Image (cartoon, rainbow, N blue to C red):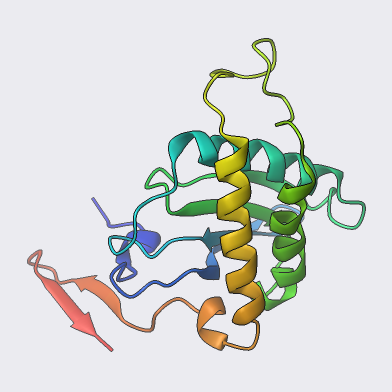
Length: 174
């Protein structure tokens, strides 16, 4: 079975940032998946599960209500490794073009007094939320984005990819 593209990126080199994960040509245009990475994989503690769940609810609500973007949003959800989120948008934009959207979404977390949709009737695990920790992670990431706005590395996956040879061995090319 072929290794999927996102697994071929050397995760030991990924830093927090906003990266284009994949671009798909679908009927009617492009759909782009972005890797919104808050933590360095395998180098930093992952995001607390309850805080991750709260960030998912809050930022999904923000994105789907943002007047200039709501019709472009297809999906916002957590990575299984708990180091970030995936954002899927209609269109073909560079990560730098969605920087302000992502920054505003994370800044907006501070304005919430409760997690939207965190009731038993709306959520599959409504008791697993942590708004205070979500606010802490959101501030940490938004501060990082502001400090690194001009750092091109927060918009580009590492150049080194882990390639698998025909005989199944790892081969690193930089």
